[in-house]
Image (cartoon, rainbow, N blue to C red; front, side, top):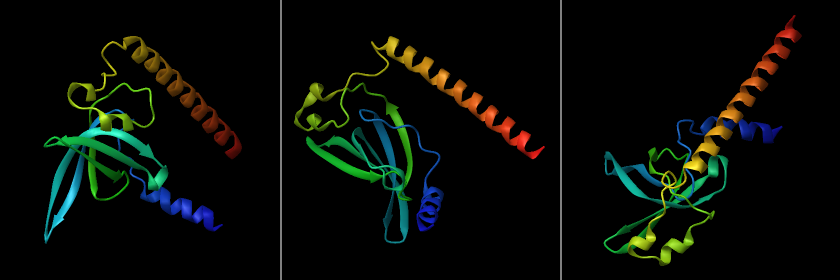
Length: 152
């Protein structure tokens, strides 16, 4: 009983307007900063090198280079301090965690763009997304038909 209540409370706290962020994406994280009585929004731009946990505890680690020093920040995605997340570009990766970027400097640090040179992959992904959306629509229609049959 208490587990269901806990899940219901956590579900109400989840943000619904977040984009689909994956490891390797370059993103802008708009963070609310409170200085005294004033509040402002600061943008942190970098590459997502890690995602962990799920639900309310989900976090992303974003890495950027500032004055030739690597800076990593971990953001709880569903925190009220995170005002907005924008995706700048999608990077193609074959790893779940990009810790190897810590050792790279200069142009070697760049990730290949998911769009360039991977047209076949985007087409396959688009087809898979379309098929998934169609199957979800069919399931929803079947569930509605079953619900309307039960009420009659």
